[in-house]
Amino acid sequence: TVSKESVEFVRNLLFKKRPKSAMLMSHDPKARHDSMRDFRNLLANARTPHTAQAVIQAGLVPRFVELLQIDNNPSLHFEAGWALTNIMAFTTEQTKVVIDEGAIPIFCRLLASDNDDVREQAVHALGNIAGSGDLTHRNQVLEEGAMMPLLQLLNGHLKLSMLRTRTWALSNF
Image 1 (cartoon, helix red, strand yellow):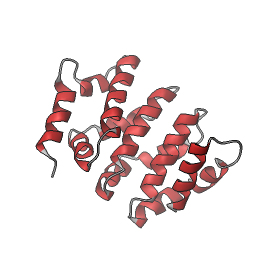
Image 2 (cartoon, one colour):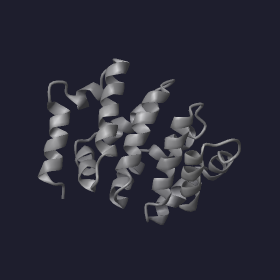
Image 3 (cartoon, one colour):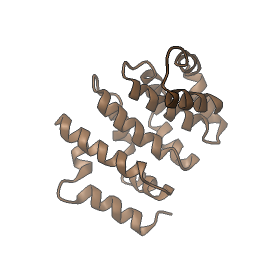
Image 4 (cartoon, one colour):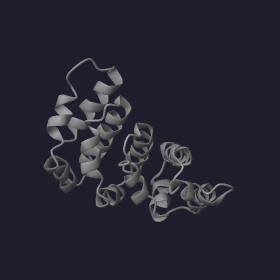
C-alpha cells in the first residue's frame, strides 16, 4: 500500500498551480521538460517505494516511456530515463510496470545515443531491470540484444563513475 503522505505529495505535485501531469502532455518542449525534471527529482529523492507507487497509480509511466522516444531531445531522454530508473529501483512489481510499457527495447536503442548522460541512464535502467530479482526480466533484456552494446560501452576512455555503472549493470546478468 501507498502511504497517505506519498499520495498527497504526488497529488500536490500533479494538481497545484501548474499541474505537472498536464505539463507532461504539453506540446511546449520546455514545459514538458520542466515537468519531467520535477518528477525525476521527486523520484530521485524517494527513500521508499511509496512515491514510485503513487506515480504509477497516477498513470504516468506510459507517458514517461513515450517521452524517451521523442526525437532529438537528449535532455528529455535523460530526465525520463532517470525517472523510470528510479521507479524500478524498489520492487520487482514496479519494474514490471515499466517493462510492460515497452521500455526495454527503447533503453536498448538509447545505448547508442550520442549523449553520454542518456547512455548512462540506459545502462542504469537496464541494470535495474536485469537485477530486479526476476530472471524473466533479465532474459528479456538479453533477448533484446543488450549484452553486446553494453560490452562495447566498456571500450574507450570512461569516467570512473561510468565504468562503475556499466560494470554494476553487467554484473546483474
